[in-house]
Amino acid sequence: MNPPPRCMLFDLDGVLADYDRGVRVATLARHLDRRAKDVHAAIYASGIEDAADAGRLDTPAYLAALGRELDCTVPADAWVDARRAATRVRPPMLALAGALRERGLTVAVLSNNGTLMAERWPAIVPALFPLFEGRAFCSAVLGAAKPAPAAYLRCLDALALSPASTLFVDDNLANVDGARAAGLSGHCFVDRAALERTLADLGLT
Image (tube, rainbow, N blue to C red; front, side, top):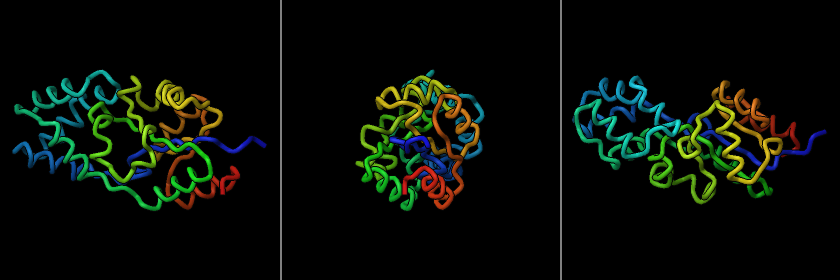
């Protein structure tokens, strides 16, 4: 029997938190005095968000690109407020992560997000801290986005942990498959109960 994992690596949106694109778009649209459909297109249909997540746009370049799409200035604080409004942590999942840390596991977050998210984590999802202090990673900072194996491997390099010692949890099966391709164990998240059954199977209850 393989030893239990020493690290639990969690996705953010859809696992540790609920994320509502509609709320994010509507909030940013109000800040910018733009139509919600135009804000949605700028974020999700232009390719800008994907480029930022992959680390190809730093924060100034990302905000400038959104501004060009929307013909206005996009202040960082407006973006942060919109992302915060759209993100609601799941207290039962934070409690589970906290319990695992108390058992001696390393708990960390790996999210496909740009450098602005990385710079403003505590303002956007303050409930994650201090539990994940120093162990919350955005793909842009790593220079690779899930499901590319490099995203997981660079994250684990930063944690000084091996893929074989890590269980990755994400609600997107493609991202779980990417983790497995990188040598991690993977769990496709549906709900806490199913995750707890996986943890029990791994000797972590």
